[in-house]
Image 1 (spheres, rainbow, N blue to C red):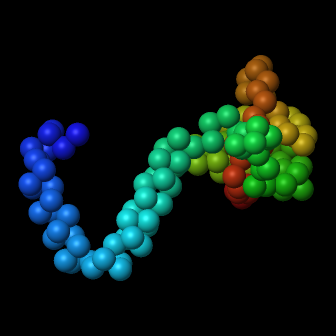
Image 2 (image 1 turned 30 degrees about the vertical axis):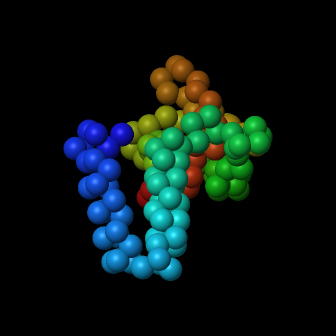
Length: 126
């Protein structure tokens, strides 16, 4: 594994000793724990919640509620990649319906259903 970096066992041992001298044996476990947690969060951020389901297999609870979305029915909306739903945008689709799990939009003659789990927040544009 370390051969691609050109490190042998001797060089690796020296690096470990220098790290121990710099941080001390008492702070090293906390440092490595923080590093592991950061790597886990980094990987989860890339993986994301692609199917909108949690680990238990149940549907994820949306961050927005229906009261925020009902006034948008009949207006132009646009869903941005970060999960922001812009209501009243100049370009976009017309929201036709919203229910407990999806919102339905019409673009040209096509009806599309968007899972509410994809909507992270609602922004009204004047």
